Image 1: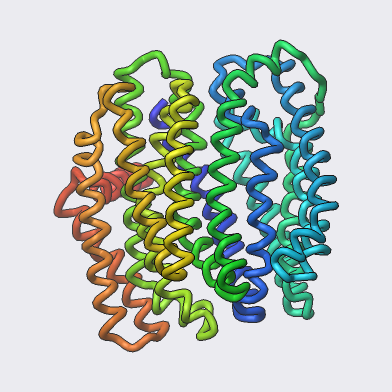
Image 2 (image 1 turned 45 degrees about the vertical axis):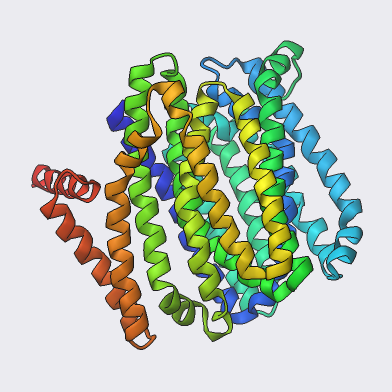
Length: 477
C-alpha cells in the first residue's frame, strides 16, 4: 500500500505542479504585459469563486470520499445536487454582478463575472467523475486530463495576450481549461447518472452539513482579506497581494492538497486502526513538511531576484509582501493536515469550532490592519496561522496518541534544513546584484545544500530521497 501511495502522491504532485508550471508561464507573460492592475481585477472575481465552489459542493465531496463503500445512488444524488446548486449560484451571481462592480468601483467586473462564472456550471457535470477517480486512487488519469486541458488553455491565453485581449486572457484561461477537463473526464469515464435518493442525501448531509458551514466560513474569511485589500487600499495593491498569494500557494497550498488528495481515502480506509493511522500520519507529516518548509524558505530567500527578473520591475513592491506571506505558507499545510485527520475521524464538530476561532482571529487582524496598513495585515496572517497550527496539532494526542511535542520533534529537522537554505539564499540576495545569474546561483546552492545534507545525514528526508534515487539507478542498470 505504501508503494502505491507513493506512486499516487507522485502523480498527484505532478498534476498540481504540471498545472501550476504551465499557469506560471502564462502568468509571467500576462504579468509583464498587464501589470498589477489587471491581476487586481481578477482578484476581485476570485473572491467569489472560492465561496461559490464550496456552496456548489455543499460539503458532500468529503462526505462521499470518506465513506467506505459509496453506492451508485450516492454518486447520482451528489451529481444532481451539485448541478442544481451550480445553476442556482450562477443565476444569483449573474444578477449580483452590477452591485459587486459598484462596490469595488470597477465597471468591467460586470461582464467578467457573468462570463467567468459559467465555469461553475461547466465543472459541475464532471464533479462525480473526478471524485470516483480519487476514490479509485487513479491520480494518473486525473493528471493526464488536467495537463492536456491546461496546455491547450495556456496556449489560448498566451495567444489572446499577445493579440491585445489583456485581462480577458485570464478569463479565457479558466473557461477553456474547465471546458476541456469536463469533456476529457467524460471521454475517460463514459456515462452519466444524476438522480435523487433521499436516504443517500440524508447520510451524506449528516457529515457534509457541518463541513459546508466550516468550509464556507473558511473561504469567506480567506477571501475577506482580498476584499479588504481591494476596498481599503487599491486595485493595484490587490494585484500585488493576489500575485504574491498565488506564488505562495503554488507550493504551500497545492503540495498540501496533492498529499491530502492521496492520503485522505487511504486514511479513511484505516480510520479504525489507531496504530496504523498514527504511523501513516507521521510519514505524511514528515514528507509534507520537508517539501513545504523547503519551498517556502527558498521562495523567501530568492524573492527579490525572482520578482525583479521573472515578473519585472513593475512588480517590485510585491517583494516584501511575498516574503511575509511565506511565513503563513509554512504553517497552513500543518493546519490542513490536522484538519484532514479530523475529517477522517468524522469530527466535523471540532473542525467547525476551529473555524470559528480562525474567523475571529481574521476579523481582529482586519481591524488592526485598517489602522496600521497592508503590512500589518500580512504579518497578522502569519501570527494567527501560528496560533491555529498549535490548536489543530493539539488534537493529535487524544485522537491517535500523537502529541504536539512529538509532532514538533518530527518536523524540527525539516525546519532546520529549510532555514539553513533560506539563510544562504538571503545572504546572496542582499550582497550580490539582482540578475538572472544570481538567481541561477541561488538555485544551484539549494541543490548543493540538499545533496550535501542528504549524503551526510541519510536518515533525513533528503537522505531518503537520495538513497531511493541511487537504488532505482542501480536497478535500471
